[in-house]
Length: 82
Image 1 (tube, rainbow, N blue to C red):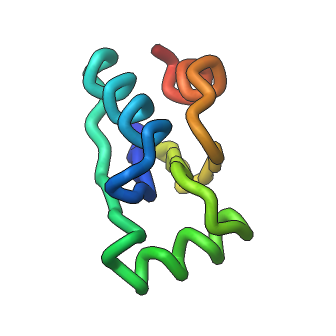
Image 2 (cartoon, rainbow, N blue to C red):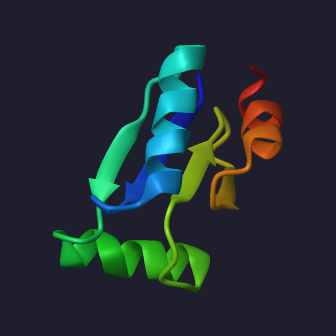
């Protein structure tokens, strides 16, 4: 099973769209609010090289990470197989 993590802020409309997509497709995810969590914010910057949200990290069974920056429905669907 793939692990899905999403780095968000409270005011990000694209973050809300990504979470709605996950819920619609029945995808479980962990959410990290980088607006209030400085450690997760730094983790997101280290992974993506930027401050923009959402940053979505999908880790497969082999521990391989795929990072998607922004809400790209097609890329998310392909990465998750939904």
